[in-house]
Amino acid sequence: AYLLTGLLTAKQDGRLLKGQNCGPKGKTVRYYAHPIARKDPKWVGFLNMTFRADLLENQILKVLQDTLRAMPNLRNQIKTIVQTELAAQQPNTADTLESWKQQLADISKKITRLIELDEDNPMPEVKAKLKELDEQRRNIEQQMQEVQNTHIAGVGNDVEPIVEAVMQRLKNLAEELPNLPIYQLRQVLAAMTHTIWSHVKWK
Image (cartoon, rainbow, N blue to C red; front, side, top):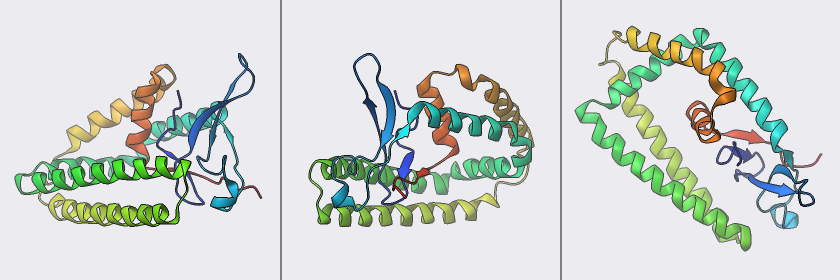
């Protein structure tokens, strides 16, 4: 299993890196690699660079633990998140946000299908379509943020009990991380970061 699947992204072209096993049978090593550069570096314009999965994942988990332990310094950010979630539950907002979330899910599926197609047969038109879909995603996310910001003011500041409960849970979570199943670790990572950028070009 690969903890960073769906998060680790090539800085050069925005493609998600994929996990792969390398080495003789019984002594395989897990790596992350660019999905196309490992097969056709000439087409993407740069040589592939692989990342040892165990080393990278351990470092990411250490950063995540340090972030969780530093949560007292992030109280204001957590408060904003709570206010945003409460604002999203207001009747006039919930339906609109749900519609946009569905659109984002559909766009994500299309992007995934195109990337898989592009791996086997790289085509310029696929790259153009990926760029178009990414622009659509960014526009929807911007609209969602604007609506949420408009309604946060109506939520009020009486969210401290919720914020305190979240703070305590995050503090405990930092110590529990090493013992969590990988699917739960992935959920924690996905909740705290949108993308992990990696430089996949040899220098």
